[in-house]
Length: 452
Ligand code: NDP
Image 1 (cartoon, rainbow, N blue to C red):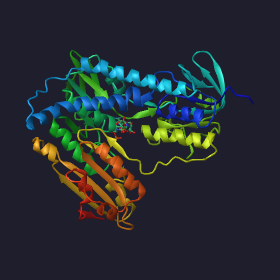
Image 2: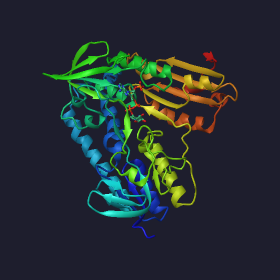
Image 3: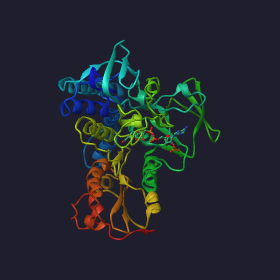
Image 4: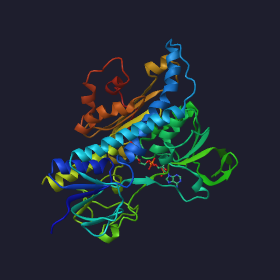
């Protein structure tokens, strides 16, 4: 049978665009891609990129305070969202243009349209066109999930934060994951009075507990009102803002309430059932190690599969899909030992197992260090750096590395190479320290603090 395209990609985010480009260039495929909103997807338009620019913006206040301690005659003044916002959006427009150009210059035909599946090879576009493809790649990402509580319609999510006309004076952030913690820190740094409710015992569940506790303490110390074992139960719109009742029965007023309570895959109203694509309980497309769905011609990459919801992982999945389908080189995606960073203040950089998970796997040694970094100590900041290595007693491999420090995201990328290569504690130890740095502590931790 003759198809219009060899590959039709639905979704112009990180995973979809990478797969489309590689299939067209390296796989010599005839490729088309449909995007219903903006090219670049969550990462570029309402995720990693604008978030990181806001992380940078929010860090300057503290930096200027530090600068004064170093002898500079500067005043932080106030942050002006009206100056930052248009610059932010101009940058996002620029990046979106780059994404469109990548597709165009690599011969990928694009449709600014919503796509729905008719069957395993046929796609209907919101422009009215119907096209066919030998393979279809679902790369539709996800969207924020807000629990169905009374008054939830008055709240915002991370999608809205970049579009606010003005920053609120006060905000309640509900949730304890990546997004909640990052935005609590960002908004606090920009001068917003931040309260955060997290229903569990400690924020950043699933991460190393002590590392997460260290961040929680730093957030509280900076002035974020972080309330653990607390959730919002009802929200009422009142004069001047929102009145939130929490699980302790307290009522508190906030100008805005943001839910950062997880994300759900974008799989509704896409005709997936027409094609026979199997979805999991959370609505994600179920795929095998090669990102193939239950329908052999349909693959899926990125957040829509809810494996590890990180941009670089989606990109790897997209590239592996092209190797498998268009380059005759079946390539499973390697989801093992993926480093990541939480851009709180201070940041958390992490790779491998938390102490809690490692304990269940076998005997381990735990090495850790806490110290005041030279730069912030001189400036009179209370911040402490925290580093932890988890080492297998059986083969001495470093199973987990966790860093809480300024720039921990940068540090963990490099430590991650060693851990991914299977470095042992002794490999770390025989690497000479780079002095004076924070990260030299990673190679100078001599005695385990715990063994289990
Ligand atoms: P997460 O899954 O990280 O966190 C969701 C949070 O919401 C958890 O604390 C969860 O609590 C809480 N929660 C869920 N349901 C409810 C509810 N009904 N009431 C109250 N609290 C609730 O999701 P995020 O939205 O923060 O981020 C989504 C994903 O995006 C991340 O997992 C990550 O993969 C990616 N991301 C990565 C970033 C990075 O790399 N720096 C930055 C931002 C996002 P509990 O723990 O109790 O379940």
